[in-house]
Length: 119
Figure 1 (cartoon, helix red, strand yellow):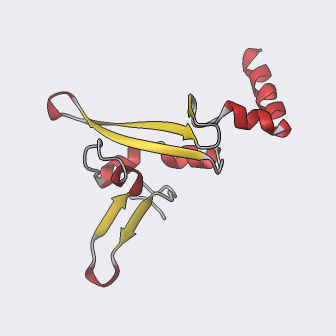
Figure 2 (cartoon, rainbow, N blue to C red):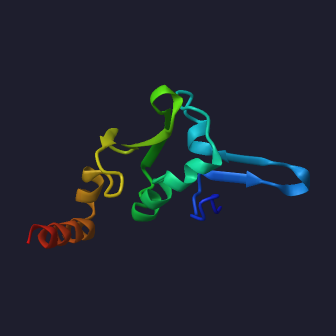
């Protein structure tokens, strides 16, 4: 579903059918430590980009809204976890290093990217 920021995100839900006014981020709804979600948070959220870059079935994302200093401003923190290998993922855009090592095509692609960056 399209977010208020115009990006496709499977974690965003909106229902305006027959007078309803429901908008929510399911990632934030599952995280009790997060501050409440506001539709403006979607413009700064990296979750749609991460899910577009990494389609691993074992990737589990956690999103937390943190209020700013003295309640001014807000920041979004995304963390990733691999369900298959039970490890924290350092870069959610790339995914789990162990999962990538199990797929030879992905490792060749990542090696080629590192070679381009290193030159």
